[in-house]
Length: 321
Ligand SMILES: NC(=O)c1ccc[n+]([C@@H]2O[C@H](COP(=O)([O-])OP(=O)(O)OC[C@H]3O[C@@H](n4cnc5c(N)ncnc54)[C@H](O)[C@@H]3O)[C@@H](O)[C@H]2O)c1
Image (tube, rainbow, N blue to C red; front, side, top):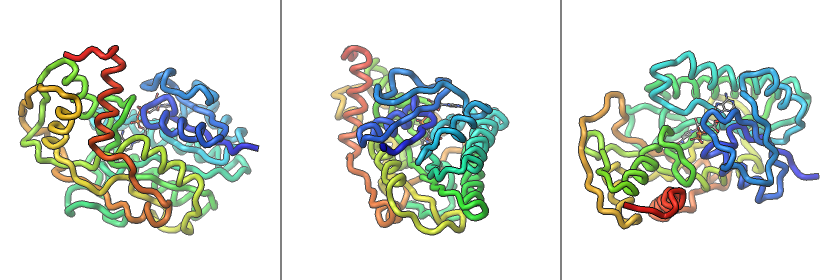
């Protein structure tokens, strides 16, 4: 019998790449998504789709009765700025929604490995020079990161106290085809659209702020590796947490330049005042993922940006300004 995976948020950007990967590996894939930001056309045809909200009793029932071997939990409110404006909304979806699913896993009587989509970019704060290791102290700057960290504490609790099989993957700034301008690497989608429109690329501050950009297909590979590998014993918060990134710091200036090159676009770069609360530097140390998950990034930034730009161009029917 095929292995069974439930992908919450599988109609979204990263979740659809995760679903693609499990379908390609011959797993039986179910997607749970309320389509609040996801799209039906993102989902692979080989997956079963259940439309629903992770905060509801129906979602809990799906998890409890579904006999899933793996739960890849990606459904979330992903907008860091929205979490600042409305932390209650953010916590309802990102903390309470996850607890609803975890309680269902606990009572299901089935062994389900839960793989949680956490963040490396919004967890560690700006106090130590990158690349950040998993064990670094956590100082999230926004309710979004606080909610992700809270869920990680709950996962460690469910592991230690109830013996559940849980993993947290802390992504860098994920980019790739189907991405949304509101996500943590939204700048890539915004720049692609501006290049297609022939409009200036707006850079906030001096553009030397850095991020760790990781390709969505590689993040899907990390989910698959975490679903299938032997994991270290459950223990402290970081015991089963893995940074998923490249370890490379890329400045916004370098990103804009590379995107201009791969797109053949000539749009100018326009500088605007720095935004409050933005980290100066961020990159993730990924040795632990290499050692334990046997995972490492395979797509270079130039190749990934080129694929992403082509996706946005194709979506417009290949029309570029
Ligand atoms: N994009 C990044 O750079 C990045 C970085 C770190 C972590 N993450 C995490 O990865 C996950 C996926 O992010 P994404 O960028 O693909 O975002 P996305 O918005 O494209 O995907 C989220 C999906 O979840 C669905 N969803 C939202 N709330 C739901 C609910 N209450 N019930 C059911 N479905 C719901 C949406 O419709 C959407 O399809 C999120 O947990 C996010 O926090 C993303």
